[in-house]
Length: 128
Image (cartoon, rainbow, N blue to C red; front, side):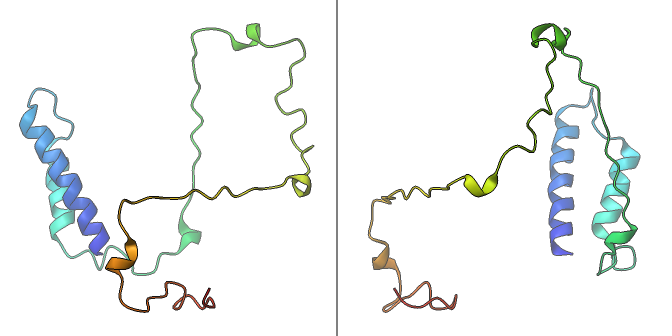
């Protein structure tokens, strides 16, 4: 609920600033602004359930046509298939490397930590 109030208050501040700075091109109507204020400053415990039932939410995927201004097929080779080789990659043969980078903060971090501090102690990791 606190996150929702924070989001609404931030949105309200941005919209209010936008509306007061540019009266000729309002981004939101007066009615929508009143609805936003009402939803921000009223108790939404009846409207917003504490537990969200994800099975009741319908997801719609909007497919938008992209117009590049030219026919992309003119620039592809003959018989081009973008899906060719899609499942040919064997992930078990790929070797991952972690590159460790030394970070220099410009000060000694131990000077700002409590005595005998162990960051791994609360995580259940044995001391190094």
